[in-house]
Length: 366
Image (cartoon, rainbow, N blue to C red; front, side):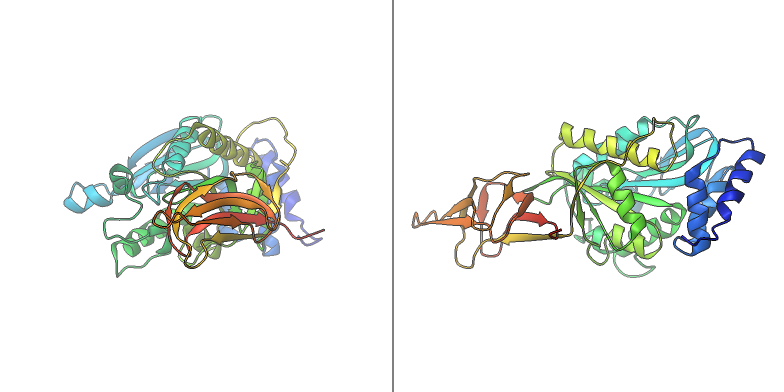
């Protein structure tokens, strides 16, 4: 922030003239825009007091709207459609976007977004909340991780006007919804046959993203920009600070993970000055700059039986489990190749060479 950030004074005067309560965060947002740290589009959201035009709909201040992404009834729409939830506050503020169900088998995030949105009161809200709780709605209904064309939507962003169904859907979401967002929270679980300790993943090279991650209020924040084509990575490239919440297992609803996710959304809304909450200190978080999977050694496939658990702190050489060859009864120990915290792991199951067993995270020494 430059030392001549006079725009913060303008923000105070702007709020007073409009008869609104002064928001220090508004001043910071405008100041960062002038400094070139965030985009002018982000700053401009502070003055959204009119109806929002989204997907051909008009959402008035102080109202909630729920409608389908594709308005027409057709064969394709029945497969590709998704619900859109919008809450438009009566007071200006940022636009927070919530996404879930990109992978149709990851149900915790779907319920997190639904519950969090249900608690939003547009009469008390400053700004706008846009929620896409089941982006891959057909996958959620059928229990499929992927789209109908068997592609991973979370590798297709920002998409395009030609090519696969995944690219077309990604492009529609990116250009017609995400261009309204000032911040994005994306919700996931572990992939099939694995479980994740509740965690936030964020690109630490962007201070705005790191701050968003820390203020989510979870105990673990893991550094990483995400793979190419993922929603959060491509959103960040487009100037929208984005993080993901990873928690639990696929194919089920898990109350503790859901409750944490809803609380995290509320924490972020308070941090962005979208809701009236008591002043809170910045939540303490275990910041991990690095993470790595420990995999099945070559030629040592078999039945996997873990002895370590999610959240365990382990050292190099610690026993994590064993793999038993069901044909020879030979047993091989799985030991840790590094020191860190177990933030993800495979459930007991048959495994082959190279299968990811334990995901460990660690921080740089002081």
